[in-house]
Length: 172
Image (cartoon, rainbow, N blue to C red; front, side):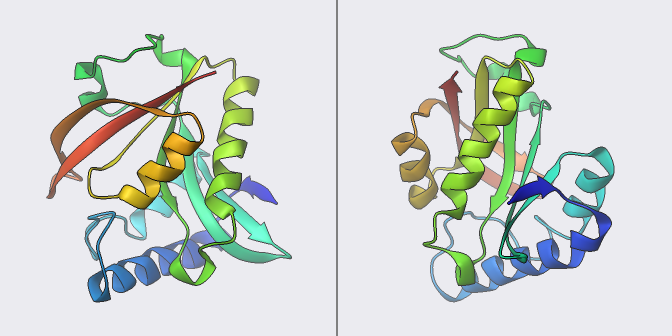
């Protein structure tokens, strides 16, 4: 089940970020996120308040989270999107996180399907997102589901982490 997150989900979401970031410190950092900087507990706190944080549960157990809204980062304006769209026609996927203990079960795929359905319900024509160029597992997943890479740029994430990002889009 995928549902809007509530304040009761903040601890689980923050713990999933921590689990992922510790795992990446010990193995390979695909996301290039930085523990203590981004994503942090502030993400679910602010996104739940804004009504844009979703959680995936399996048999009542927290398994993954994602932010879905129509807020494109300023860097998106410089991308030469193949599918131009007005802001109200774009759903943006942010901070999709499946903690390592829950990986390999199709949860990211379910979140992408949910995002697509939500975008259609909102009258969107395009879904956009970004991911670090080193995040090949995420890129493979997105490309497999019809997304295309439309641009690349260095950005300063959360004002503190220099990121080399691919910008992806899906025409609905």
